[in-house]
Image (cartoon, rainbow, N blue to C red; front, side, top):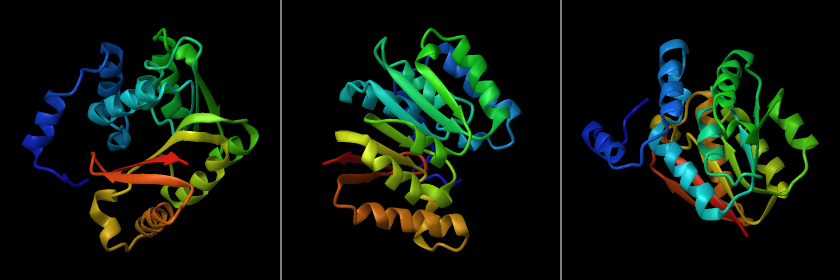
Length: 211
């Protein structure tokens, strides 16, 4: 993964971002030590960004597409009210096994519900409305996730998509995932249901508000 800003600036941003909880720090450390693809972890700066969005929007119901080891879900759950609910979807039993251990160790873990299975099927089965949706799963299905989630997001709700810069490969897409993300970015740009901004945070985030 490429750095979009100099490493020293990236570190400076991290140094001036609110700290993660000790449990989240431990989860990040285990992910990097044990998983073959630890770069999938969103990291502290992006995690705190998501947590702040939950607080700012006063979200009570969140849908996450792509759990990995549970860092982003737990980060957002920490900002949910006591009766808040986060549904997260994934197909990887090993990664979500790590997630479950850490959720079980947190007082906020009870706010999280894991749906293990194809996300598109889960989206079809669950009822809205949701206040916030975070998409961070297989890139080839981003457009389908976006369109399937949109009817289940309330007006004024927020939808966030991760990895939209894809290490810069969206500028000259070659591989299937490159082309999928470039097509997704175009899809969002032309979607009149939302107001959207693309942010150069980590590997790129699109933040949109449903009209």
